[in-house]
Image (cartoon, rainbow, N blue to C red; front, top):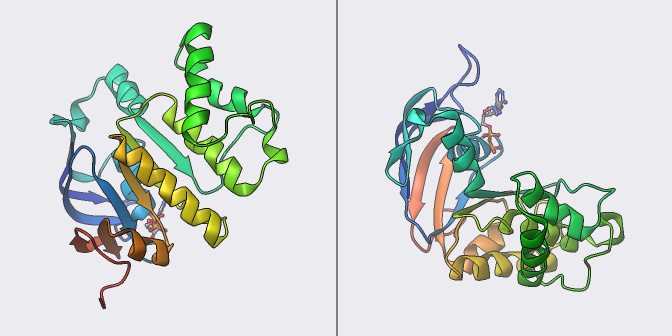
Length: 229
Ligand code: ADP
């Protein structure tokens, strides 16, 4: 589904590359953890997959298509096939839970009828039925992130990208959210998560791609956060 060949990313001429010579293939339906110290290149890799940034060199293809050949409309379509979840949730504080999730559909021009149908389904999927009229400030951190996940899911993305989704949450809540990501993945969505939650990575036994200094230093099925296993 996603393939990178010799991909490098340099943000500013002369700066150390954020990514160097990345070669990887992620199939549809996979669950992948991106791990590595701060500055290793995890966020950059997610941005490249989202096509928010273009690589400095190398090639990225999505569903067999070289993403550098996208026309502007295709670039939009690519992004709409991805759901994004952030560490800081990025909810609109003045909108209710329902409105936050609905907004993801409004901006892509879906009809009110479709919005009325899809938003409750997305909220049900993340376990937030009944919280439609709450405002983000009335929810716990874990619930707010569930809204963030519902917002990403409501457009039925092919790929769910999450950058440190549990970075602001305590261990129990983090575990529950990882179980939710796992469930979403079992329903067929490809899931790619950058995380420092080493204990959860070790428990979940998923593919682990470890980055360091912009390079892939390890790529293992049923891998661990660190190498010494
Ligand atoms: P991680 O997510 O693993 O912490 P990042 O992808 O954020 O790593 O960063 C990789 C490298 O790229 C770091 O050296 C970082 O300082 C640099 N970097 C990231 N984003 C930018 C940017 N927008 N402009 C310039 N340098 C950046």
